[in-house]
Image 1: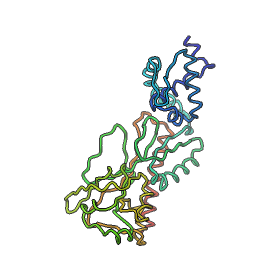
Image 2 (image 1 turned 135 degrees about the vertical axis):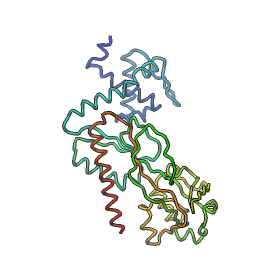
Image 3 (image 1 turned 180 degrees about the vertical axis):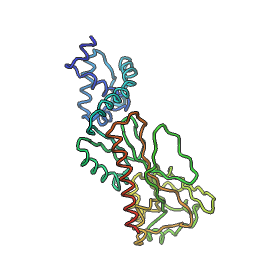
Amino acid sequence: MSLNLLSSRQPILDKIVFFCAVLRTGSFREAAQTQGISAAAGSRWVKELEETLSVELIKRSTRQLVATQAGQLLYENFSPLLPDINNLCEQVQNLAEEQLGEIRLSSTPLFARQYLTKIVAEYMELHPNVNFRIFIEAGEFDPLTIDFAFRASASYEGELSPDSLLVRKRLLREPLYLCASPKYLSEYGTPQTPQELSQHRCLYARTLLGGNRWCFEQHGKQEIVTIRDTLECDNSEMLLDLAMETAGIAYLPHSLVYQYIERGDLVQIMDDYQCASFDIDLFYRPRTPMPERCNGFKQYLIQRVEDINTAKARNED
């Protein structure tokens, strides 16, 4: 029976892989996105899989998907095999002299616009058989389905990095500026100390600064202030636009605001306090061996980020 199920007439393995993705994500739509097929096709695959195995695998309702006993048995025994199967395929691919395959990237909007767009376009020109799938997002990501993730964070001198099973490499570091439009400051006043920020409208990204608790340092002493929960947005460029439109005080990276501060469109405030640093880190899961397409892209990206950053600094001078 097993020989018939694994015959070329029954592409059962693809369907089991998709079925595992459905249980892992809890959604046909999300599973279809990760597997690169339509939700309708994915639903049809699971139905065909159930017909092939002559057993119901998922109980469907309008609110949730629940695996049957048979479905849970299949998922628990097959899902652990997927990383090994994927690694084997990648090892075989690495025997090819030419880089090929797909690279999945997850990036914050700002890094994607300032660096990633140019770097990916260059790499596709150099390696036409390498394909990319890019997800623009700022929150959590699944390292099993993403090859490289780029995340922004705010850090302070002496702060310890959180433990992680992922490899983390610092790509960029620049200062953060506390700034607002001249009109906002004329209407609501200019805060002189961190504590005064609690009386102002503040614009923040939860993924960047840990929510509504901002930290400042002066003369070696740290001050933490809880800002009013005015507006939260995980897109730095939108926070910039909001600050320019007199919505409140924003905490933004140098590369995004320095030209507006120089022109007088924004005013840097509390510049006698040391603010956090704006960091862009590269995250990826350790793999031995790493697929050649991923290893080649990683090395190229690190060098090009350094080159582009150096050119930007030269232009500012």
